[in-house]
Amino acid sequence: MKAVTWFGTLKLSENGDVEECSLLEKDPEQLAQHMLLAVENEELPTHGLDLRELALACGFVELDEDYDVLLREICIKAAKRQISMTDTDDKRIIQAVEAMDDVDKAANELSERLTEWYGVYFPELELTAESMARFVARFGSRENVPEDHNMFSKASSSMGAELSLVDEDLLRNFATNLCGIYDTRKNLEQYIMANMGAVAPNLTNIAGAPLGARLISLAGGLKKLAAFPSSTVQVIGANNALFKHLRSRAPSPKHGVIFNHPFIKGAPWWQRGKIARALAAKISLAVRMDAYGGKLDPSIKVNLERKVESIRKAHPEPPKKQSTKVTQPGPGRAGGRPAKKRGGQKKGGMNKGSKNTNDRSGGRPA
Amino acid sequence: MKVEQLSDGIFEVIIDDRKILSTHNLYPGHSVYGERLMDVDGIEYRQWDPHRSKLGAMVLKGFDIPIEYDSHVLYLGAASGTTVSHVSDILTDGLVYAVEFSPRTMRDLIKLCDQRPNIIPILADANQPRSYAHIVETVDVIFQDVAQPNQAEIAAINSKYFLEDDGHLMLSIKSRSIDTVASPKKVFKDEVKKLEGDFGVEFEVLQRKELDPFHEDHLGVLARMFVDEDEE
Image 1 (cartoon, helix red, strand yellow):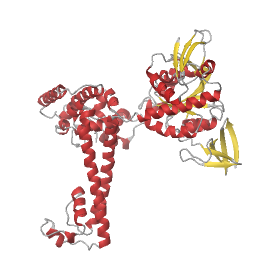
Image 2 (cartoon, one colour):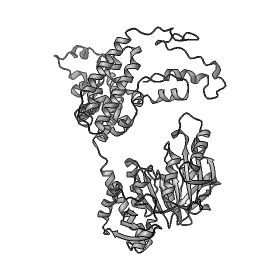
Image 3 (cartoon, rainbow over the protein chains, first blue to last red):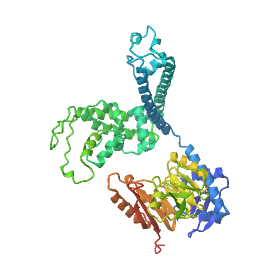
Image 4 (tube, one colour):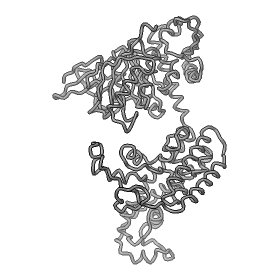
């Protein structure tokens, strides 16, 4: 039997004795390289071997300690190399998507603070978020608004307090930084737009760059997303609702992040679940083509459009609310979901009164 | 301050009637994850937080830890090395092979390996023991903390490859990662049953205990691999 090991290839007899060994050179760089390549080798041992004994028997090392020291050095080298190879296109997309979320959070917080603070000096300014930051960064105090600006009359008759020079500097600086954050967000968005086409052409064609990127990010990679069943794709991003559904009697979520697709968002509520299912199926197809080297195939999108069209035609009217067996009409909830009575549930200790309401509202994905 | 030894390399430092689980720091002066360092009679001990380490919890739950100072250990699911660092403390004359699948946590683990001479990092999938069969020798103990749905299978196939005859397997089973809905008691029962005979390796379960209050819905298992001598 032949066996590839980290220090060389051995030929072993039936009872495990070494018959022949071709050892590698004791060069850490080469050994690390060999260790990584060997993972693909067909002749890896099919069961565990006492490698230490074998290495000593072959004369690769003379002492136990030498074995430890050398193996450790090589494994660290090999692992470092593997880590440096993990920067792939889809991982960069994930970083960009997550960076965008962070930036959004920071921008919201800072712009709220700016509105609050600058509002003291110019409460009539009806700008928010980015336009407000740009305004403050440009003018500072409302006294600097020129006559030909459309805010001039408001600025000159404002009930706001006087803004001292020191405070003006501070606020202007703050606003300038906030503008920088908004710029960063745009850059990230452009980065995703520009790169998604190359990373996942089919996914981008069907779902669009932002949603496609979000899906990759939630799955943790293109290959992982491709390995998901489309039912998972359908509800990915609706974790809370899904687990509530699995644990208790809450209704299942119809859609996770794919809700942001115009097909679903633009559809009336009774079609959404059906369209979500069709869309998720096509997204799965598209991602699998992308992950395993396919080129852009426009037919997936054509088929999806046809399918969505047929759903729209087949269900033009909302279903009758009372059509299903309802023990009692729901307590006036919009959406007409039958209220769940759980008379027989009392003895099941898991779910009790107050939790019940949570479950139902949780059934709807955010 | 007093020190009591629980087993090889595992101590309880007693400060003001409080017992603090700890190991003898192999790399004095350095704390790995922000844990407390304690000096007793010139020897530095490192606090071992049982809430962050399944193995630590197993020590306090009264398991007979089979790891000795010169053991060779295969550690599956090393993560960023919180527990591995303590195993490394125990193994003053031994070696731990730390297998981890995620490159992100491997980054932290490698930093630890750079400081400690007895940890061998392996970036590989514990589902595929063959992909590191050219690296790992036969070991005395396998510790597994992988939180995967096929935990029992992973433990069994790795034992088949690497565990010496009569070697010990320690694992922590997380019921939530096997079935989020089923009751933990049932999941534990099924997993232990699977482990005992479904994968062509037999184990004798020596101890099993839930790891609460340190870890919720986790079961610690200590087993010895059973070698059927008639078959050989």
